[in-house]
Length: 421
Image 1 (cartoon, rainbow, N blue to C red):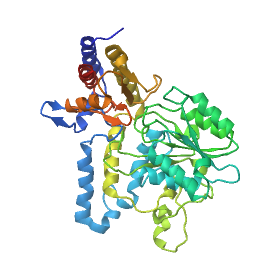
Image 2 (cartoon, rainbow, N blue to C red):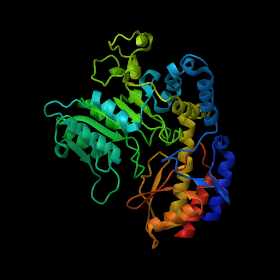
Image 3 (cartoon, rainbow, N blue to C red):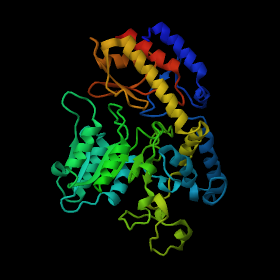
Image 4 (cartoon, rainbow, N blue to C red):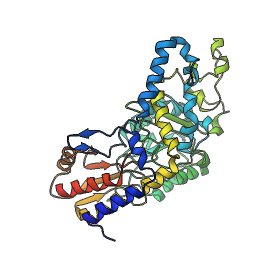
């Protein structure tokens, strides 16, 4: 059925009435202007603040005020083991075991620390496979790792490119590239969701192909965690890292997450060592003999920033209350599908959707094909209270998230967009 704007509005109202997750919108602070709440479709850049966050952070502020150094061992959430309170729910969100997940550092720092262990070039097996249009920080990290090992960045960084005239990568092309260069690849580092196009990569198939050739594979899950259902443990992914300020709603610059598959936990891998990676029962023996903590905890270096972890803990509680990623992914598929249908039916050929139809994530990447420049359309949307983002050279990224966005939000976006085209 082709939707008109009038039909779409009625359908949005009906879908919102039927939405079993609608109540979670009230657990977030929605920015407003003079006309009321904004349509916030920018969770792929910075998620909104859960109302639980203030309470979680104030709890630690009060403990610092009243207990000072004793706060490392007092209260419901002792600072000494605070990161452990995030492991169970954090692991469930990515399909892992709690021992495989740790929250520490920032995303790019975690990629570097993990590549110390998992990028081990030897002989002709020394290349890293990444995408040609990787997020710049990922490209910088991979290139600098190649350079750190004294290798040739131009020759040893293998770049995946879409076919001529296409915007996204084909899974068959990724797999055939792995086959073709298997004897030269030391590491594959790809995103779960491509930041620019919103394409969801087939992580399971990529991992299986990598394992056939004995190639280590890691994923940047910045745009996947809190967005997609994943099964990192079952897929056999070697390592992964993600930020927590996008779909995980933990605040700007919040502590990031890392995954190390349990098959690597007992291996004598090279790693950068720090006090917090030492197993906790003998950490205070102060004998300068490093004994790695079990699981992913061994990759920690320093004691973490508790106030930032408190914000992560508060956000993860909301995910747990909502039932985890399965119901959220189901709503996301319906919400983003509704948005896509409205765009196709109401905007015609004035808007090109780069994101593949089979993508299961929140994000749709749009290119404006009307006479009005895309940047001008983006600015008009912003002025009308629609919060999306612009990525050069010509993409408007739109990300309706299931925890705090409504179907009426999607309708308002399309209604405003149609008026500006």
